[in-house]
Image 1 (cartoon, rainbow over the protein chains, first blue to last red):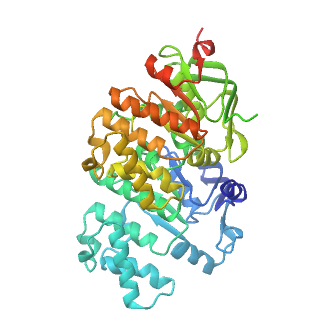
Image 2 (spheres, each protein chain N blue to C red):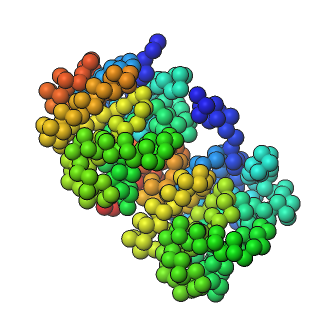
Length: 265
Length: 232
């Protein structure tokens, strides 16, 4: 009974309403509305140019919408319009309460400084100042993402692609964010490396109860990671639902095309 | 009404847009119920829509019209119109599904694959693993395999892992899609026993079995799916 009541009372973490973005006459994203709940993983799928990356930037306040708005429930429980946040609140979101995993780890890491510093930096930004504790926490996180702690003093430029991506995830999760945005997180990786990373992300997301919004063109990634999926085409959300439902019983012509285009394993 | 599952005029049609919008009617007018402690077996030839009906009850296939009432935490929820997160909640704490094939998660040990449904419902890892081991032993999966991921196992072994994972939880509804299909006689007998134990615990089950002998052993009621045939 407690679960049902918590489900009923559960408040959305992020709410998008009528989001749109125009570049001149090009509508990159139109009329997107949805609510994301704590602990929920939403995949946004579609081909290049479908508007999914634009949508991710709108949702994560990196781009201002042409219309509509995004609201986020701050830790005090109040739902706030992202466009109306003050600078300190925005910084809090970017440094602590949100994570952003880029397709290219070089965009999310500082490639020239040590792995330990890459992880520790996020902690220092939120006021940690005890060197020993920062290093211990960084070591724990390297272990959690399966990086040999012996490599803590090496810079990520000496890491393989898969290790860099795992380090980027550690750097993002160390501040215990409630929401993580991921842009094609397995994009540039070998297939064998992808499977390991997906498995790792799946476990971390469920252990930490994270909410996540994952942009991917890979339906296998959506199936493994997400609870819900939104299919985008031409800047619009054309189909949405439970991930296994949309993938096993796709309704829209375009979704059927996407699903039927997967090569059998 | 005390039924755990109650379908009323449920209907399903596939529209194949890539084949010029061909409509493939699957079932229509699907109406039956399952009470606690009862095993309802769906019968009918291949292609009659038995698996589709199970998938509709699990929320894996959408229901075009009609109602799929599920008793969830004491309330009736219509799965045909439920929100995705409501369906997820129902799958976590009300409906289990034993499919014919294991959708293996790479790198996860067999014992953890089996224990997972308990862990997500808050059972301590040690206890969950202990119960998982007990079931794997009953289903004759040798202990030396427990720490390996099941992806390399034989078809019959994978199916038994899948059965262990499906039967480990205390969910009040179980959907069984040919749970004995590739098992030998000894393991089939174990599955029959497991189903009987679930009945005594008041679990409502809907099953598909092709083996007449097994059907006879587990069925409290048989629902003939051919009466729901939608194909012209």
